[in-house]
Image (cartoon, rainbow, N blue to C red):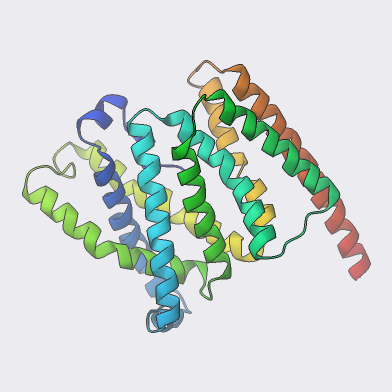
Length: 283
């Protein structure tokens, strides 16, 4: 998913958009974004039923902690200059999804898919080694979001109801913290101009909407397929950095990019052939 702190200039980030405030605003405005959607949803009874179910509530507490931890680690990494490790985390995450799908959900890869996994793994491993140190930030990001995707796939609750419950659970502490910051004149909202205020509010759209699509896809697709689709995001970051910001690209990044997109091409072609044969035989 896109992240709202990219909307801020580097100077503004240093001055007021600290990691905690960005995270708190993401939670609060996502809650206000989802409330009217749930209220207008025909199956809004599922939301109340899930809230009264202790088992589902425990699952939602776990996923709420995982997704908020992922947000916080990413924000901290970007603000503190660990952008490469943050990017690497989103390259590792799809591989972790494939592994989790095979281990926990007994998903099996066809031969071409296995080749694609090996190619992608080779590219990620090469980029990891090129860093010269253990990328704990990248692995923390990958684990948090990978575990979140796995649990949401098997959780007995829809994408909308589940995400609404997650934001509801996170809303009270987040709102309370923001009130405290505002009361002590340390809050960014309403203090730094309309541009910052609108950007913070927009965090709801770039947080909740992509997560809704992700959790919906996670429930309908194999986790391994979902994992490979996630390579599109960091690859787009790569292309955007080169084409728009004219950033210098290392040989390791180019090599990783080549391996991953070759793997994506193989995986996609194999899936297209398989499902074409499947639908032909099912007629």
